[in-house]
Length: 277
Image 1 (tube, rainbow, N blue to C red):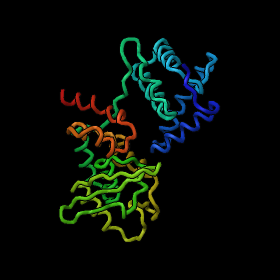
Image 2: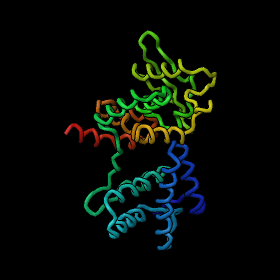
Image 3: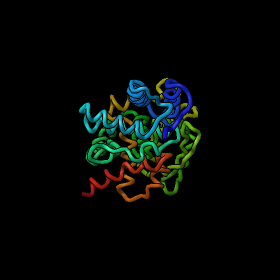
Image 4: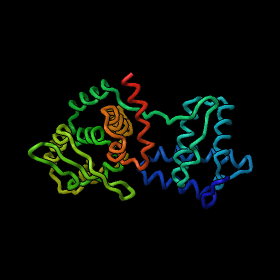
């Protein structure tokens, strides 16, 4: 039976873009995901079908089409992940429940994370960074797993420090208005204190630009690429992977990382198994 979502194809894609934005996805990710869905729409329309009346059979047929086109397993997985995300965005996650490749079920694409040696290299590089702000940003992303958009929204008052234990917590607000509390390690608290005590302004924002304005996501992304050769998503994935590897319950990992669907968190199980094996 066909599943229906409201509006024209353009309306559907625009709504998907809004959904991704509310989830804190970057502009590049939103553009890529919407491009995948646009291609899927074109394929459907060439067969006189519409994404506004999507069925499991349509998705399965598209996967088989991609296989016939000799697309790589990695590419097919990425396309499937996007369609799976789209299905969740229209509250129809069951659309992808039984989709199969020729020989096996499609799996989530394993998120890329920093290996232990790469983390150490990152930390060593931070010791040479003269910018206390940049170092604090790297430690915050690595040890809280917050999205860049969430990091930029943080205020100084969101940091709750415990002077006795030299630890603390941070209140993180997502774009959709949800809040979560993430514990802060001693290492992170030390870097935040170094940075905050060096500040001479009275701006509410936790992280400010060189122009004394709330720092922008593009500024953070550019800094990480130029100074550390790393993407912020990789730091977030490293945070999640490390928690799963340490045996933290998936529901807690999902809560700390702000995953609305624990199935997203389950991606890290295979990674943890690979490390153990």
